[in-house]
Image 1 (tube, one colour):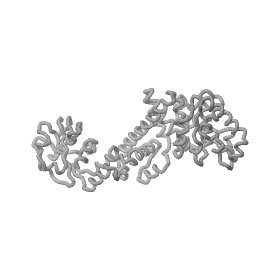
Image 2: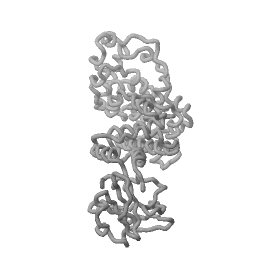
Image 3: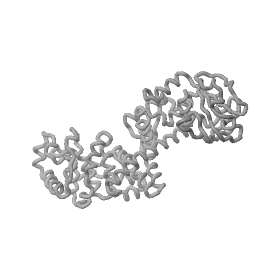
Image 4: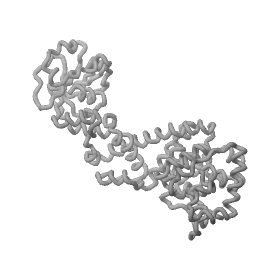
Length: 427
């Protein structure tokens, strides 16, 4: 009971308005105060407004058992401004000082059991169904806060990559974009390849298409003959383009001591077309920090990313593979994913570095212009009654799931606070 009361008070789970003391006086919590580890039930330096008058002092938290004891053990009338008590059944509070205000809270035994199961991470609060009942204004506010949290989490990752790239923003953007080309399913493998990619070697040969493609495919481990499906291998080995790439990579590998990914990391997938698209983006020299910061509209972003493949990759899906009807531009959903997962976080982080609040907001505005993502997590939220209107909402819900629901981090969740408020009766 005491742990519940401590959580309720320290997290601000009580309603902001409508509180009354046991004597019927209107009460507002202006400053909740601070507690120490040796006195977890006493919050000192609190400020409470009672019937329009401000009082400063200590708030004492008491559970049902402690309420039966003498208040003399909790503090003096001069230092105590509010006694907050908690019980599992409604009842009036008879123990009152004339000069000490009291607030009494009741909750069900079922909720007490649920709280302790949640805090021990055995279960989660059953709050999903209550989220959709929030007023739109409140719901939008919480989703906006979750979105910023997600971007700040990504900021830590981008900052680390930025340092690994010797503080070169364009190289950082490229490596972030590479992960997004995994489209969720293969993001980790693409990231492993990005970590190996030598951007300094790329920079020295950025005007040579064959050498850029050799570095991309070679460091991805896809110029090893064993990486090619056996039914395509003979055709690939005889192909002029494939052999030119191998020759160039062998030269550049020795020159720059290039490392390469084990081709077996790709499994049975064929990421060749996506890697070819990344190489083309790099060669076009428009997918840069300067490029994304000067793109004024979402349409401009689409133009920045969209391009058709030419040459070998216009009609092949992997080395030696049979010809296809052609690899045109990426689908819009794919471009949206790249904007969501690489361009928006980069705008946010770069804006932070430049102290440019407008740039940070521009990234968030882009998310509000893009349709909501579609995946298994968002589908489950929709089944609960949530209706994400845009990518900003879906990104917030993804963060809610991964950082709170999935990890049983209910104790720090804003929606859990709303759920708890519904479970309490204030008297």
